[in-house]
Length: 130
Image 1: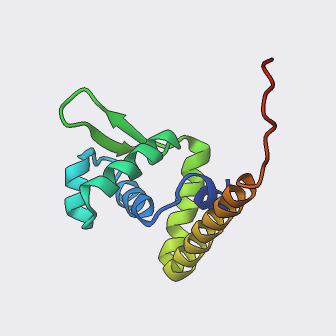
Image 2: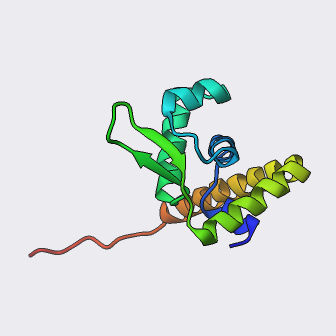
């Protein structure tokens, strides 16, 4: 999976990117959402949303055996190759990675707005129950 595909499908926010980079940097880390937020300067709400998405994308693993839950980097081999490539790309050219993410986010919003606009003009026929 190439870097752009990973950014387009699994890592869609700057918070997700920051968390992924941090946990990938030390696979022995097993942190709570509060600890991640504190280390990265991200609000708890944004950290929680990012963690859910990263776990859904199978980039992180949630250990819910304790309270609070702890999170660690646990990607499959295929995803791990893409994440390693992303880390290298980010280290070499962070502005390009951020630009691509921002452009992708704007495109998703634009597509969503156009769909909502088009859906507003779909006319439905009244059902005649009689």
